[in-house]
Amino acid sequence: MHPELRARFNADFTAEKYAALLRCVNEATKWPADFRIAETPIFLTRDFTDQAVFAANQIAAQTQTPEFAMHSASAIPPGLEVPNESRHPEFLIVDLAICQDGNRLVPRLIELQAFPSLFGFQFLVLGCMRKAFPAIPQSWTSSFGGIRDERYIDILRKTILGDSKSENVILLEIEPEKQKTRIDFSATESLLGIQSVCVTKIKKRGRNLFYDRDGTETRVESELVLPD
Image (cartoon, rainbow, N blue to C red; front, side):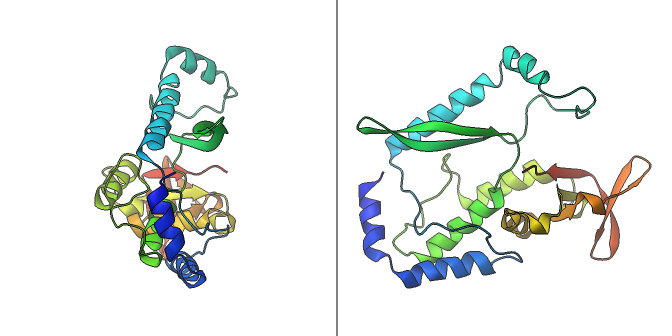
């Protein structure tokens, strides 16, 4: 971990600043966080960051082989395949644990996800941490690729919305207001203008899907399905 940033943060930390962080996170969108917010971020060194990125890229590369495609195809029961599936997912999330190997800290795989998990929330909490804790440099980011804030939002918008308007794209869930990650839904709505919609609220007419958006029946052109 980064010793200078850690020492600076610890010296500047107060319970009042942590309370300010919680207020920022919980009051920024229509839904609060339903899980505990850590008192501090993790300050990674460049060396460990490079290790984590290398590990993630190696894992991602394994999913792009013909052998992986052949074996993964058998994991989906017949009749449950998704039509018009793209060759690769737009999102690939590699969750890594920080483990100790002798005297070294090393990244180890927890799980792999192919859907947008907490992309809105992580941007929200980054801004709140910068605001609550002045010891965190404004240039510090949670983006492993070093992407600046505006570019991050731009990439997220283009990937999720494409050529569609925000009202024609939805976050599809089962009772989204009851999910532990609902703060991510509301954060994404704040960033991109797309609403979270329960699957039971969708209406089908012919080959088209519709949902109620502020009293107006609105056509769905694309949906993000967020499995738990």
